[in-house]
Image 1: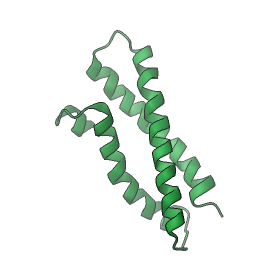
Image 2: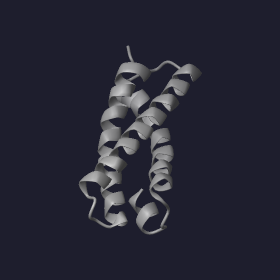
Image 3: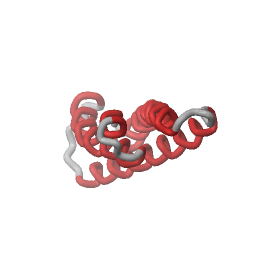
Image 4: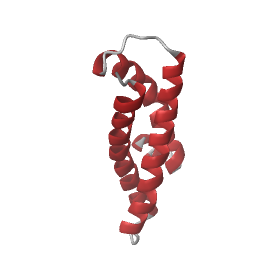
Length: 107
């Protein structure tokens, strides 16, 4: 995400979203089989996972950007965007874990 933003000069949304498309595919399999030890096969579960990831991403990054822009109003855009991505990443991890634990892979 940070490489896409800082070296490839992609915008905030493209950089953060591309990171989560790739990361979410890996996350699904790792969380399904190792974290939550869920052995059932279900397309419905995949759909719920995609909805969870989408909601968590939009919520985390949608809240992080205006919050950081407000806190760091005097800083350059590149600084605000990098801090926003960092804050969004932390928020995403929390939201996503809770969503997967309570909805996607609930027992």
